[in-house]
Length: 291
Length: 158
Ligand SMILES: Cc1cc2nc3c(=O)[nH]c(=O)nc-3n(C[C@H](O)[C@H](O)[C@H](O)COP(=O)(O)OP(=O)(O)OC[C@H]3O[C@@H](n4cnc5c(N)ncnc54)[C@H](O)[C@@H]3O)c2cc1C
Ligand code: FES
Ligand code: FES
Image 1 (spheres, rainbow over the protein chains, first blue to last red):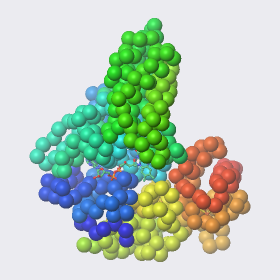
Image 2 (cartoon, rainbow over the protein chains, first blue to last red):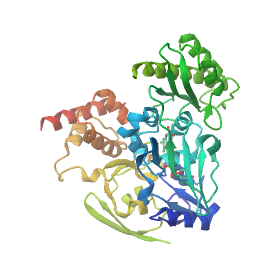
Image 3 (spheres, helix red, strand yellow):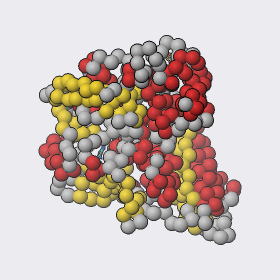
Image 4 (cartoon, rainbow over the protein chains, first blue to last red):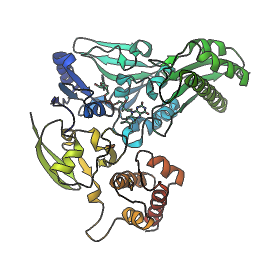
């Protein structure tokens, strides 16, 4: 047996889970798909005294439309997002992004809520949610609140969640009609965490000018980065090779991705530029192809 | 604190009273006695421990046995129809030399069996993509791709 001993509860309802969180707070950890937490426990890098397993709470999983918005329950598995026709139809950026998460076997267990709560700076879904201006529905026994992605992701593996709070769902606004989206990343091996990547949405007018654009980067800093100055540079401009190139350079200005054995800061910056460029080109092509 | 659990493994109920920290992989091997499921990395990377949970391939090193209580698990031992016959996929692995030391094989079979259910006529490229979650140090993968394709052909013609 590898993990250190822990107490274990598997509540059937959100209310029971919130009771347990209120009672144990800091001493406990939520167990969702376990695809990030259990490896840490197997190596005893994490030794939570108590686990609250939320896998038996059916109401936390599912993909719904709510007033045009997409609402993804926290316990929805990555593979459910990957295969959802609802998501592919209205939010293809998510379909493309989630396909990059680990391997099929990981996606069968890993969850959307776990991925955002874990807040790995190299994770795909947080960057995609940043590009789509998503909001997280969060509940505690004492109160519920909505947290925008920008406030939610604080730093690496750090979110704005209090110890007694549970992410219950992600709300993703509907992209405007005619928006093209693309997610690209580069990793050393298929299924590895990305060394750099970009999630982009773009809308063009009839003359090929950029009407709206969002650019989010992963593995670019401690949290997902929205390249707002590159976005404003592109907005109103003709979208061509030159403006895309310039925006990609602007997108990484001021970033200092951490160097490690897979790549220097300099390499990672160049990679992020290339990823941004490719994502913009792909998204613009798709925007042209959508009526 | 221990818990009484029962898990349906390959159609048979396996029961035990276990600590919550017991991994599903260790339950399968040590409590149910089914040692075909192998453990390599124990952090989700190598795929040797892959089993099917309610029909879908998952890492048994990243689940606790208590979480599988009341669920259905399939392991490599359940594949062959009887003691003398291999399943179509196993037979194709055997004929194509898709294994050498065999350490990775149970996990690969569990992944590929589920993959062929979803995609009965896969291209070599999509077989390779589906194999990405299983590491093999011996074969170089070529013969595994050949075997999966051979199995697909035989399943379709039968
Ligand atoms: C081999 C391998 C490769 C991987 N590759 C990638 C990859 O390329 N990209 C990627 O993004 N991920 C990757 N992952 C991680 C995977 O995506 C995880 O599923 C995800 O990061 C965490 O989700 P989970 O449901 O497994 O969460 P868990 O591991 O169960 O939990 C993670 C953390 O979030 C907390 N938590 C979980 N749910 C909630 C909630 N609803 N509210 C509040 N807190 C919560 C937990 O307490 C824990 O601290 C990989 C994992 C493995 C094993
Ligand atoms: S032992 Fe489970 S993936 Fe390696
Ligand atoms: S046959 Fe030896 S690891 Fe695959």
